[in-house]
Image (cartoon, rainbow, N blue to C red):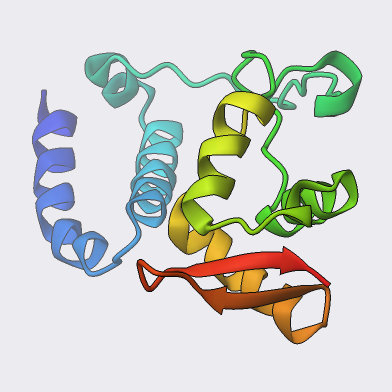
Length: 152
């Protein structure tokens, strides 16, 4: 019991220093180091705290990439990310989607159900402006004061 009391006193003294670190993981590492050193010196304290440390090499798992087994670190299926808006707009441009005048709302309503990719207006507008600057598309305002995009 004396060792446990002295350990509590020591931790109270160290708490201010440990809390000075902003990172919780650093705090845990410092505490782990302190406890490990103290436990190594007094095995009785380790038994009282209920922390039994095994010494030796850490066992490492055989790491495989996400592409090989289709799973992420947590063991769940790896989720494919959606393509960037630029790639989708380029695909629409190649398919003839912009042969007619299209608004951003038209593009979003088409890509959602037809292509399975849901984008916000803000995600589509910047690539559309780039396409206009690059000379791939023209844009004009319609009667509702919205921009309509048309293939050059």
